[in-house]
Image (cartoon, rainbow, N blue to C red; front, side, top):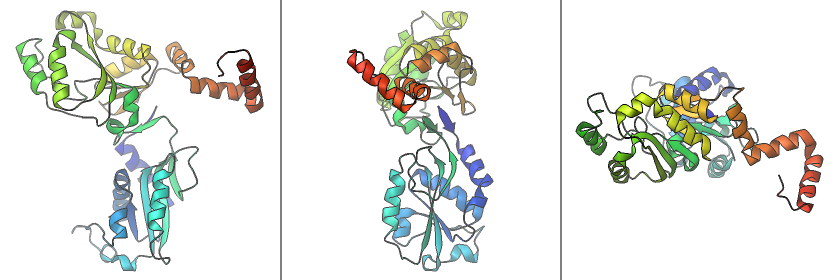
Length: 330
């Protein structure tokens, strides 16, 4: 699972700004996430900034007062070359749509289309791609709104809501009060495959009520079935419980609040774990036997391995042979 942060995007833009045409007059972002990249580029180059729909209607964003120059004050009619930017492209669909919209602009206006993060098999619809990031991938700015959540496990405390402090974490009345009124932190906008928490099973009604109140949609709520927090601490069950569940389910990503637990979960499960502490993607070791087993459980990976070993012709013969034998084709 490849992961890029906002800080990664900033570094990639700054280190590659020499790749943007020197004669661009303005930077135009494709809403919404393309505006993040466009704003960074416009600031780095000190160029006017706009969004694509507004630009098509003749509007640009204000440049503010501290960095205002004659170049920033130039009207749209004076532009000769604009950079149209999106944060990423995989299928090219958003960029194709943007090109279609921009086609109505004056033929005298030169347009360069760019993305920060491209894909290996991306269609030839951009002029500049700063960095290739293969699938599967998620970004800091979209992970809580990404389709991957349907096949993901999420922690609750420190992810969906704030962690309790020491006084609130008493395994009693103060903790119940915390669960009832915990401030939301990251509320996803897509259905989640499984919420996997070391909260105790006895607190299921309070947890379900909070999730319903905040509109969190999920398939399963997996809680730790132990009598009390003291037993949980004595057994050191937090990370191990989460890692074993994640290992045995079909999820492809776990989002955890604590870095130390994220590393433990990754080692136990053999799968990637995103730690929100430090925004780090924790991966199992390269020689992890659990990770090797997980890879073999993925049909697409097995197909790619078979094609690599046998070639397309050999792979085709294998499929035909398995089909005649009544077995399912790889």
